[in-house]
Image 1: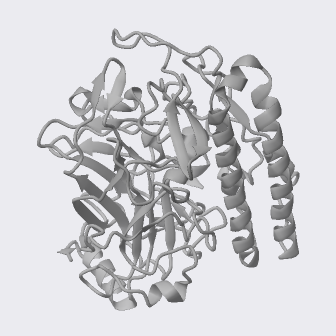
Image 2 (image 1 turned 90 degrees about the vertical axis):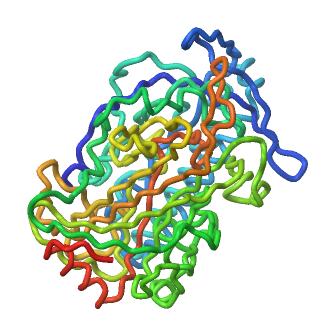
Length: 505
């Protein structure tokens, strides 16, 4: 599948130091306490480390990415089991963070008390996934149980190539034959672990003025528009989530599963979006879009300011119960634009087309599906992928996303939510016989986020994405989701506008 099937070594540093906090249950919610700070000199700041804490986070094969052939009638049941796998990882990560003192006194504690039981639970869940597929007339991948084993990502790994596959088995075209045990990027030095204890940290931030122009280093997410082909654009205005519509569901990746994302999303456009929404529900839902012919749904993980204040979900799933703490801030500007293809006309998107871009698990999965671009207003020729930007006074944080815009011409979704779509190649073409559809480009601006400060190697008042707990709120895990519910007339208007080189809205 074009670029999605290629394995790549991780260009990011592979040093990782555990999130600097223990997680304790009590008092009706989560109580986070600093456990240790990271261990080496960085920029002249000396730090100390608890010798006993040897595992930063947990890396499990992302089974959902490997299931490229699941019968439609089995997909909802499989999705529920995949969400259970995610919950099992979260529970194991919680246990990891709660037991740092026990780990310090027993070198085999993590393997015996955390990873061993996790493997047993995953084995049973993987068995049920196979049964779901086979009962629906499909053929489950051979020996699904080989994906049961997880690894503890060490507190520190040597810089450079450790000889392991870094894409966590994301070979989507090969039927998931990789054993999936890549270490991911391992991350950067974890610093003080942020307000929540499991990130972000000082090394997750960079002054935007220290970023070189045109230095974005991910091959995914290339802009499809250019000087040739279909040069027009179509802009839809859907607000900035003034309604504060948020939930921790994901109707694409985890349909029918409440809190399937384990982090909060901002929604604009369709107002009927939750885990249980059918296509009919979405087609009939209200929309915040100015043009009522656009009932599409657009959603992304929220940003939070970790300044010691909490939001209304501090004791709720997707919020504090899943390690997402701090005050949610909505974007002050949301730009939604569809553009053409630099080598050809575009064709209409089909109704209910689903696209996920980026990877919420890129920290452990690796970069194969990562698609992140962080910047600041006034500096948007400087984009970073694995850091949050520190913007100068008067400049706002910017998140930019260019979606996959090559469609297989048949399917509105696929079993792993990836293989029915692809990114354009470097020359702007679609490979493997795919057709060009309008490319969604999303630009989010946050003029309401105070710049974090780095003091003595610690980050003060950081902001961060919501994430799965074991992903440590890394910026590389940013992602964006779209479901097309333009009515037929408006979609045709969009296509005509783009193909004729006009700029419409």
